[in-house]
Image (tube, rainbow, N blue to C red):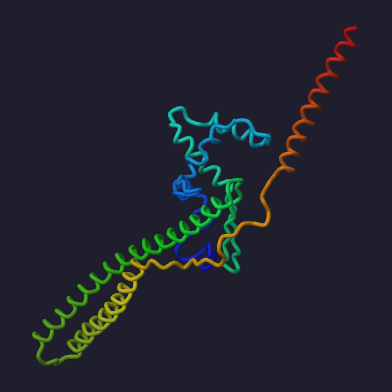
Length: 267
């Protein structure tokens, strides 16, 4: 994606958005389709949310910690939703090139490639929709502020015009410099208020357009594609298993040596 920076005038950060609970919940509750079956990620991953054993020791500890961390009053659906959001969050890899304003979103999952592609498409659309909503909300706030200023300037203009009218009716002939100066001041105020009123009216119309604008400053540079790598972590998991076995062997060896030394001393 391209077209928006992390420090844009709207304060919209894609990096923060893809980490938010609102974003994760929106994506896991979206409808997906495989083999003519429709489902959400909450339901699709529900079989694994209570899974404890894993060949990866880090995943084993993580699963155990997650199960123990759930509150007692959570329903099964709540637990499944939490699991789905955490799984999605771990699968998302977001990066940004600040010089080019180029954004990349990668998803790494062991599920069906077509499902992963659908998730990426929903992520892109969610970012675009959120960017548009931020723009519209800011435009609405700006419109309301400008409208209040327009009404205030309009009242000031009308008051100045009324003041000039009364002044001219009361002073048919300007016989003194002070009266001439007073007239010039009133006319100057009317000119200033008129210019402000015209400028704010133009800005108000622009804000009204922005409020209803559905176009986005983000545009798609590359369509979602499958990586040339299958994303398998067999060797990494095998390494973790061997490392765990080596750790247990060292502990067992140390325990046996300690007991042998104790028996020798007793003898």
